[in-house]
Length: 147
Image 1 (cartoon, rainbow, N blue to C red):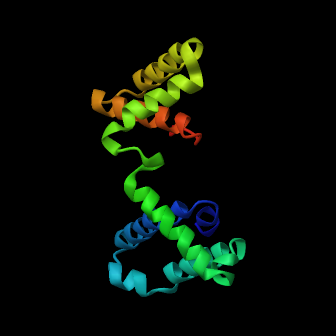
Image 2 (tube, rainbow, N blue to C red):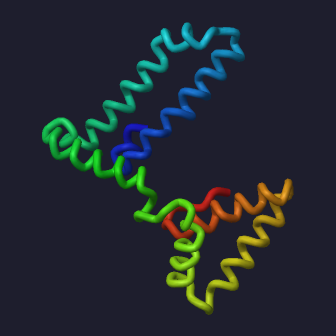
């Protein structure tokens, strides 16, 4: 988590699923959530993540003012929407980016691939459509797609 957060601050959000998985495992063993959090494991994991972050991003401490300025900008960036796009208008903006990136020659193949993938998933149509949007958004943003 610390290395992921060092590369991109939103990597720190990985703490949520890790913590939930730890608490679910404790629940299956019959341990209360408070007792599980009082143990050394979650604190050691958090410390290791923080240590990894600080080792790979030392200027967070060495120039804390600049770090806080940049971090505050990223908070603002995430609050207003990715690339400043209103979340309600995001599908249209992503479609424009796809068109600009793929053009008329590759767009049919992209849509065909997304359609085939959604058809192979099975499940309710809403799930397939949601998964197709994740795949397309992942390709637009340059991130690997969800599989």
